Length: 458
Image (tube, rainbow, N blue to C red; front, side, top):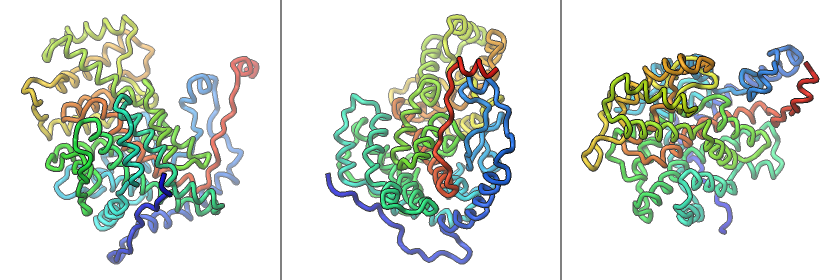
C-alpha cells in the first residue's frame, strides 16, 4: 500500500470583513465552555444531579443523565440543537439559492459553533469542504474490490476502517501532541471525513447499481455536498433528489446519545480516530432496535400494501394491525425511547411529500409502497397500540415510519437508504467529537454490576 497522503489543505482565502472561518468561530467559544467545564468539575463536583434507580440500571440507562453532549439534546417533545428546535433553526439558518431546505452545511456550522453563519461564512465553509473532497487512489481501489455479496452498509463500514490510516488526529496522538491542542487535528479529520463522505457513498452506490465507476465526476466546487453527491451518482439534473438529500441529512444529523452516536462517542473517548469511530457507529446502526428499524419499517409497509392494496378501509387496516399485535409482532416505526409525542421530524417529511410530487416508477405502475396509505396508518396504529398494548409509553409514529418509504418512492434503492442516513449521523457526531477534545472529556468507563450485587444494595 502506498504511504498515507495528506488530504487537501484549505487554501488561503480573503474573507469579507467580520466574516469568520469555522476554526475562528469555534475558537471564540472555547474559553467560556472550558470555564464552565472547570466550574462543573470543581465547584459542583459533588452535587447530586439524578437519583439513580433500579429502573435506570435495568433499563439500558434510560432517563439517566450521564454523558455530556454539547450539540443536541433529546427532549420528550423532540430534538433540540443548542437549545433550538428545527422549526426555530429553519427561520434562522441560511439556505442554498433556490432550495426550500435547511442547508446541511449551515446546520453543521451551527452544531460546531452554536452560532448562525452568515451567507458568506456558509459559502466559504462549503468551498473548504469541496477543496478537501478527494479519496486516495488505494481507497478507491479498495472500494472497487469489495464483493457486492456484502451489503452497501458493510462496504461503508469497511471503507471508513481503511481510511483510518489517514487520520491526522491519530498521527497527533502518536506524536505526543498536547491534549489541549488535539481538537484542531480532530477538526481536520472531521472536515476531511465530511467532504470525503459523498465520494465514499457514491462510489459504493455506483458499484452496486451499474454506473460506470471509471468516469471521474466533475465536481462543482462552488456547490454544496448534496448537489455534488447528485453529480457523483449521475443525478445532477434531479433537483428533487438534491432537496431530499439535504432534508435527510438535516433530520438525521444528530440525536443526542442514541445508539449509533453514543457508539461513535465511546470509541472517540478512548482517543480512537474519527474514521474508526464512524465505522463503529455504522455497525451499531445495523441493530433492529436502532437504524435498522428504517429497513424493517420499509419491509412492513411493503408487506401491508401487498396484503391490503392501495386503498383499504379503516376497518381493514385496524384488523391487519390487530392481527400483528396479537401475534406479538413488532410494529416498526412506532414509539421512541425518549420522545413522548409524535416525532416532530415526521412533519418535515410530510411537507416534502406535499411540495415535491412523487415521480412515477419506471414501469408505470403504482409504487410498491403507498405514502398516502402509510400516512393514514399514522392516525390508526397509535390508537390500536393504546388499546391493546397499554404499557407502551409512546405509541406515536417516529421518523423511521415514513422516511425509508419516502426515499424509496423518490428513487433511492432500498438497500442504500441506511447508508444514506448513516452519512448524516456521522456528520453530526463529528461536531460533538471536537468538543469532547476541547473540553478534554475523559474516557467513558461506567461501573458494571451483577443483578445479585444490585439486589444486595436495596
